[in-house]
Length: 220
Image (cartoon, rainbow, N blue to C red; front, side, top):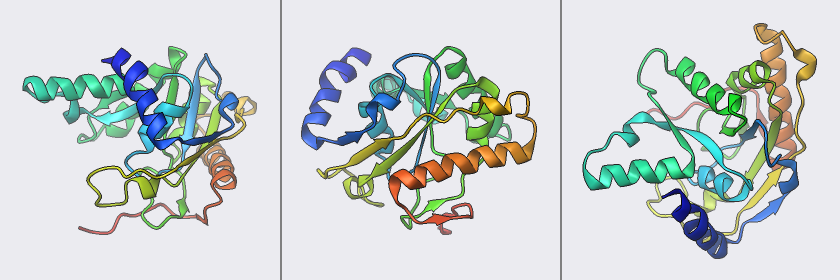
């Protein structure tokens, strides 16, 4: 399945959507790295996976990997090929489990992508980032590459079942090095400062309006 995605599906999707990619050389081709992106649509993960130039891991809901029968196994295999790492988000330790899974990827010198906002922005603005991205960067020493995804909300608007053919732009920024904070990962003020620096880099790439508050989804 991994070879099918890499050699057949990925080139086909790139041919159809023809994403415009800026700053691709800013993503190291080897070694640990964190890709921190804004989040506009469900297709964001696929866009990063197809343009980063190397395998990238993402967190995925564990229930997607436990389906029964041929269909369930096929979905699990497909998600694994895309780089998803299963995490149970329904328990009290979900946040810690997610950080642990991410650290395993980085400790193996892999690339890990994260959306610091925590959820998709429904109003088009960039919202305050959660500090998990800083904890990962400080705890592993991995550089952080800020990523701006532009136009993905037109590919799959909220409520749309299938992606539409629309041009998207991806901007990879210069890697951010936080080695000056070595040994200070336990300080909440440092984690906040690192997260804010990452969000500032994303907003400069995306040109979104920044809101210094966490994004809250409307009540169902």
